[in-house]
Amino acid sequence: MSELIMERIAENLSRLRLSKIEETLSFIADEAEAKDQSYLGFLDRLLQEEVTAKEERRVRTAMKIAGLPFEKTIEEYDFGFHDSLDKRWVMNLFDLDLIERHENVIFLGPPGVGKTHLATALAIKACYSGLSIYFTTMSDLVGKLRKDAEASRIGRGRSYYKSALVVVDEVGYMPIDREEAHLFFQFVSNRYERASTIITSNKSFSEWEEMFGDPVIATAILDRLLHHCRVINIKGNSYRMKGYKEKNNT
Image (cartoon, rainbow, N blue to C red):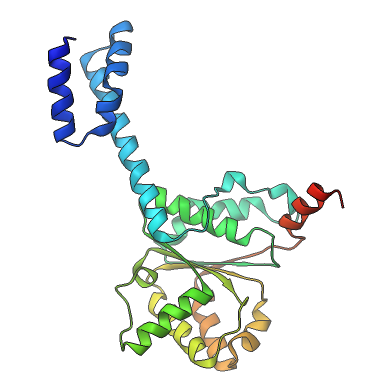
């Protein structure tokens, strides 16, 4: 391929913002020529490279905006560390049919068993599937809900209301007052049967009454969350403590 033609192609690719094709054109062209590849095969390879790159940028941007605490996939989760956890039951979540059905997921268990890891991995899978996601801790969420209430707006246009999947992490780690409990109830009610919510908590359901400080509110919240819900109860020791003990030989 002549240098003049390559320059003209590169200029047009730049104008069309096809950066991945511009970056890989020479290499793929040389490879196609060496393998005597058809024109359609060559074009197909170029377009696939560009689509893959654009999709990866979309996912990276979406995950950054969503506020994910880290990037961990389900493949990185150590199922062997928790023998009592039903791997098949967990893996069924990653079919993502629960989001289509507007079902919720609640991960229960003590600190360090991987609740946040599983919730984040599920959100990442949803993001790669083109679904909108949002991650927040309970503490940050009630802070946002309080600000919305003070400004006399419900905030339905915000990501923590409208996203197809919202993860609320660390429910029960920090105390909340009665007003915040009411705000959380409104949040749950607004998403009820409209979109999926993932909850992670170190508190059993029997402790939610004390956590929210109001048995009526606690019951109403659980009623809506559990109506269409899959509950994963993870028992066992902290994976972080396992790593610490191995590192320090204790």
